[in-house]
Image (cartoon, rainbow, N blue to C red; front, top):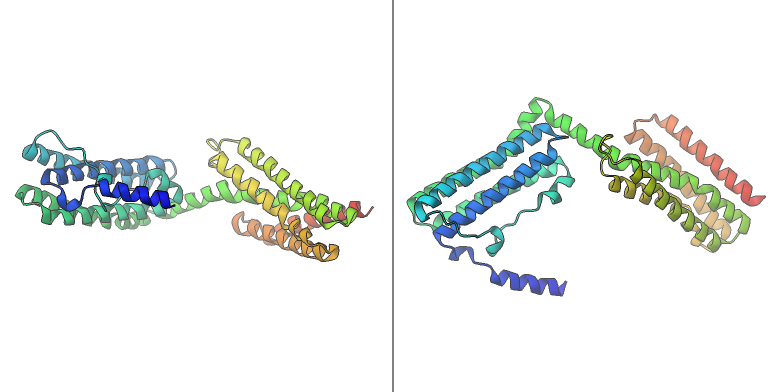
Length: 332
């Protein structure tokens, strides 16, 4: 932490102050900024095109506008200073805003991408307004002023686009697509893991508990069963398909989600056996089992649209049978 702060301080000291930039450097900074924003918007468009085609068209248009701004700035630089544009970017200027890489934003969802676009336009507008008082050249001032107005109008672009998309039902359609993707990538694998971890480990945990009456050994068996089941389910889910044809998303995300939820499901009723008193630990473990099974039924009803009574009958009844089998075997 201390080293990173010291490094940042030295890095900050090497940057140019915005007030010290020449008119040519301000133009060059504007050119590089518009070019980078255009690439970011195009990356958003390409990343969203498969699942959110309407929003992809929006970002295509925004990328085209940024490219037009860059062209205007380049034309002015050529007339005023010639063809040689100084290499100066946002990261070279002290206190200047920085852009998040598109791969840090897209995974957060379509709404966050739209919000990021609004923030980008606000920052660009602020830059042009800050640059205006520092230049005296009439042509440069005029162009910077025009671009400031253009960026200010773009601030509401995401909102206007959202309104326009709402009119044709595209926003609702994209929201439904995003919800479906969330269900396929996280909820479905997570639910499968939670069910497997909660139910499949009941028999070994409670069989060990009633066979040994040793809470520590029972805990170790439950821990091993939970971790083993989590690893097995995680790899099974990740290797089941790559998500390209089924649209289920990243196999790594699905595998991690499934594996972790499997472990959570098993550890829920294994952890009480850290308590030394056998009956206290078993009573708490039994209560946790009931809670786990009803939570699974609730998730099935809420996210998978399974009728609650049907989900409860399947999960609770099935779990009760496995629990009874474990107790019976352990008591034999």
